[in-house]
Length: 118
Length: 105
Image (cartoon, rainbow over all chains, first blue to last red; front, side, top):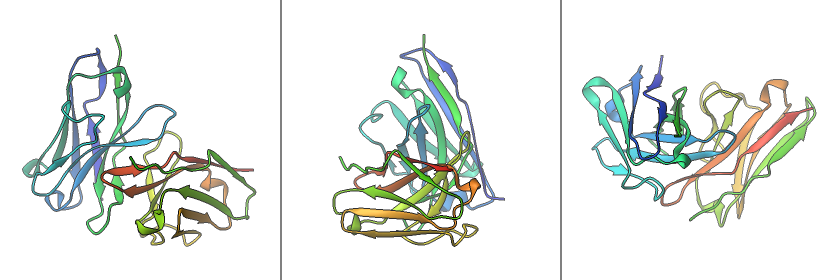
């Protein structure tokens, strides 16, 4: 079964750091671009970061310089290092697989909650 | 930055047709994808590249895209279709629509 399972969420103080992980199974992880997408409670979806098969990375302006996406193909794992966290970063964070032929996300994890609060 | 605008809500009776619009500047020139999200669950891709369906998605879900509006159509609506729906495109980044809550009356 194709699956993504996130972990690492929790409560962190403003200015703090957190590292999220996403374990992939059921597909050739190294062959796919992978992404993080977040959703604040009661709000819409927001793309957070992307990493290509060659390790190239992309971020929107809202997290650039604070978040770092990485991958470890030997462990079928995706990571998101989040630094200088703000209250506005509070959300459920999903990892997602991008369809190889288009810009859609066909597989999503169940999400992990990140709460930034003092 | 590119903006995708959706109506906040759409209500439809069972068995009828629901149409959810996604407005964006010249969106017809882009590939539009649609996701269904039920409460407490992750999004599910229901239509990609304007009108293609992933395996396992019922034919009741269809899409179109032209000009400044893309549309997701749900035919013969069922109670289980009640969910939030998001459109998405690529435009110098991955952009999601504002979301539409579909209520089955």
